[in-house]
Image (cartoon, rainbow, N blue to C red; front, side, top):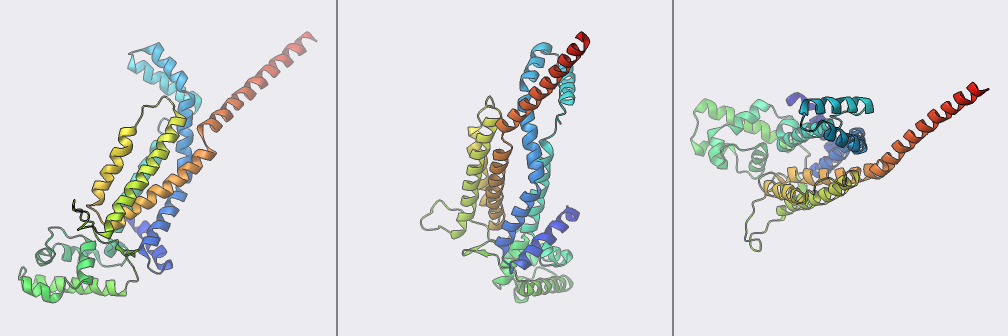
Length: 326
């Protein structure tokens, strides 16, 4: 994944530099650019879905003809797809690519030291696995965001390491050197992790006592949840237009965003902010694609092509018949 992450990290870093280090703005623009680049694949996926709807009556007839003979049914379906020039995996590639991109972006957002501040990964690993650092931060596996937060708040310093007495002299020296390298990179970096008073490096800590223990960073997972609900509604409406007989997914409509809301309170605000951006931008682009490549328009165009083809054939037959009479 490191090879794949590197170019995307460079793009995100370049955007951040152009935006005067505004981390939130760079995530938004990065997500916008990625979604624009993926428009051709989204259009292809939309066309594939519409084509599936167009040949559905033919598929139903094949099921009636072959019944429980799955082998013959699969062979007949494959021949039908080939004759109709439809890819059986037309909608899979965009989803797979988006999944890979999502994993890359998550890694980059959660690892700004390694990908955005050019800190040696060995130095980062030395600090993260240090027993002294683990004791100071009270976390078994502190993340890069935890380290940034601790160094900025002076919670993680050479003096604190001395007090912990968890490592021998040589190991302690290596950790100190690594922390100094990271501290210098943080001080030289222009990255601003705040968005409207919310620190995107923080992980929201939910409490049922929402009146006394409310935190502003709770807004990030909530906004991501609402954005996903909106996107799910748009997606469901589009699927119903493409295939009116499709089963209702109202349960999944609420289940997935609720699961994301729960996960949102275990990840940094930067990740949930990306989710919100991705949902909103993706929803807008998908709505535009639906407008220009909607099933009714595409099916009408396909029907028009079929009628023109039939008319040309009949005109040719009439011409042949007329010529033979003369």
